[in-house]
Length: 183
Image (cartoon, rainbow, N blue to C red; front, side):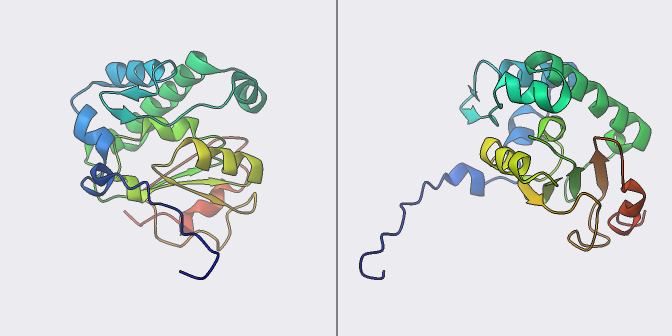
């Protein structure tokens, strides 16, 4: 240690290192309705069955970003989650060992529904607005949120992601082909 420089103490939680996905370990047996209801419960109870869930931004921030907040926002995210599972067939095959990207992640609302599906080390959010990206990082320590340009570019590696979801107006989504792993 350099003189006068204190190294911050580690707040290491062994349970995080012992599992690829604590949410899958504890909640894989829930059907989609029960999983959605558990996420809604996490609005009021940030710790459920000993596991800290990602936090939520203030309702005003949520309303500013997508027009509503809290339970309404989670119901909308759940509808999108179910659509993706059906439209892509993702719900019919294990996501373990696969990579997930939420492009235009905002504060991480959509990503939450996928938390029990993918290994947490393989979940990424990409947010062009630095303030929203910083907020997502603060609220959800389980996945990696990246900041970059409003249109996908070389920031994201080619042939990396098995599933890419995106919000907003879809600008630049045609460029995601280089980021998806060929099926």
